[in-house]
Image (cartoon, protein in one colour):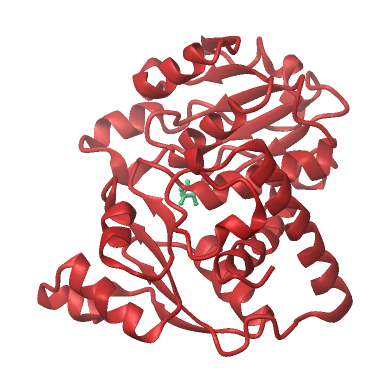
Length: 313
Ligand code: ASP
């Protein structure tokens, strides 16, 4: 468990369960400073001489480029392996050997992989810090940190909120991580999905064990008015084995301005992105649409994490 900013140095970030409220506050404080730094100066030299290896076995736009931008804005350098098909992975190299290789050259390794637990496996073989940038349907801890940071920046509170999570709660790893992280605060949950895409049993059990109030419903219309945070997600097509099943659920929820008329005036709409139709483009000008601000926050959170893991805060 990491409980102050100094205790981050040299650690891996594999799951949100590593954080407590004190460490979250600490990291959010540094992320806030990183925002000020970028807005005033654009960059700094804090991580000059340090190298990050960005190893992506699954597609990414925001996570990969925000880690790159975070490292570069702090004066560090990046080795990017975004197309593993052009690396020795396609020759059959094992994950442990790829990791052992990259840590010869880099000071910190970011990994995204289709298998649950792959980042933890990588961390077993690496002496250097490993950051889980998404392990299949498992977790996406840095996304959850930036999500929570966004809630704090936008609504200035965590406790007392009603969080409505919508869409693919079964396969959406960002939902898994964020739900677990929110259990550290007193929030109420409404989980909105078709039956096929409900939250996995272990996460629901964790919600119950913490005594948080929650409901599982299928109709967004009936609950949108309760939301302080409306967390939309895309249906994760790549996790379906049966394409017909995906087609059946893919257009289940779409939010547009008409639906948003029923929402509170002071609330936010979030989405880890990419969106594939769940939020109409007309929504983008609504001040409650926080998803672009949310992705900007990703860079500040990742700057804070890199600085902390490399012992520079
Ligand atoms: N970008 C997020 C992830 O990697 C969300 C998504 O892909 O739907 O999990």
